Image (tube, rainbow over all chains, first blue to last red):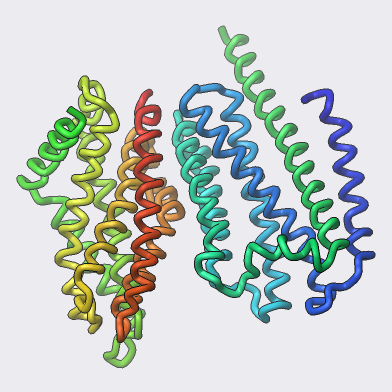
Length: 221
Length: 225
């Protein structure tokens, strides 16, 4: 992973440099016009968030049952990324909502559940910070439960049928608007790569911290 | 054996509670004071806001439930009895089920008093479909208490447990509260919408299965130091 880090970071940077140009060039969608361009990053953010939630849930479960310290590092790194991607996703969604629905925020099922998921992962970070000794385990439980509720968030929109576009948007987009479809997946790939790069860097930081603690203890003895 | 242990733990909790009735009375009083505070916000010119009753009922339940959860485990911590329980040669999931049953019974006892009070104070026809309402309440209580019991138990060892319990519990149990509130709303409206209520009852059953399974699965490693 360490060897791949620099090339991966470069690829991600290039993709993020090219994405705005491609988004500017692609033709307007017929009903939403300019606003629709938010969709490319909005969708990609939530896909990266899904990846982060999954990694956090799985890593939490591994840590809780096996006690592997590296699993805990992956869990905390991805939990922080969930919080960041979630904040960005809600921000871009809010801009979109202002134009599409005329309001910044709508208490629609999908938005409420996204808000909730964001709260779960802020809760996760709060437990880690203020839980005292053994907080990693408590946070792991939070990560598992948080990841378990995520599918409900995804399905919620299908069950409740509210103003948020249905999850079938992506299925029909490919036939109607192939250029946009390709670009959406390009942006999604860029965000997923960004997730991997930041995750690896963050885990490395956590490893170095653990190593530093160990050295301090060794020096004291 | 599993059931026997669970019932023994339940019996122990009920015996302690029956002696002092401390948690029942304080929880109930707190729930009623919640009603009083909601009346300030949701009653205008003597008339309660439409559709407010179901929300008031469930929020009062969630708040008072948190209080009861904290107190139940505070009692265990005080006597160092949780450690004794965990050291006993009994399966951990059985202990969890016992604690969960005690918690559910306590919350249901609160609901028995709270329900007529909400119906009376906020003029809500809560008893139009008593059976469906009972289903909603029991399933919702199990969903809330299953996560609550697990989190309260694991937080016993931390210093900041009083603050952390609601922080962890509410975001996770919001789906249960949403389902409870929407389902109850469907039942109190005129005429009651049984199809919608059934949908929420199904959803609550799903949440309960997921939450109880996860709690049983994680209780053992979480309670091991």
